[in-house]
Length: 86
Image 1 (tube, helix red, strand yellow):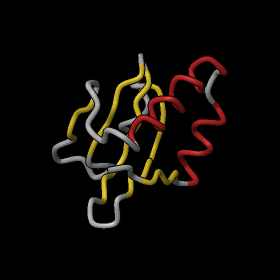
Image 2 (cartoon, rainbow, N blue to C red):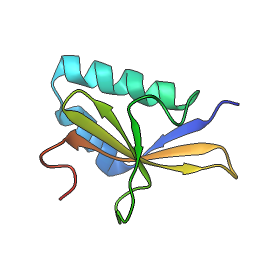
Image 3 (cartoon, rainbow, N blue to C red):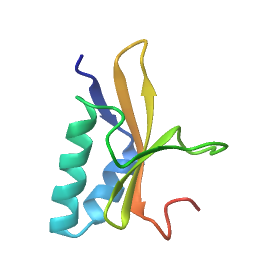
């Protein structure tokens, strides 16, 4: 079952700030979330107020929520691992 991807305005700004090569890798990883919400680099975030899940793309993290009832993946933030959880 294919899920729709939605980006928050903050995630869109985060992606625009990225280096071109990193941006391509991040966008590819986000597209893959529509087919597989739990990829190999997936981790559930316990106790996080930011998002339910995260996926790793090198030193970058994609934080997102999954809404199974309306088949959507909502990307909340994208950023370097040293800054993303602050």
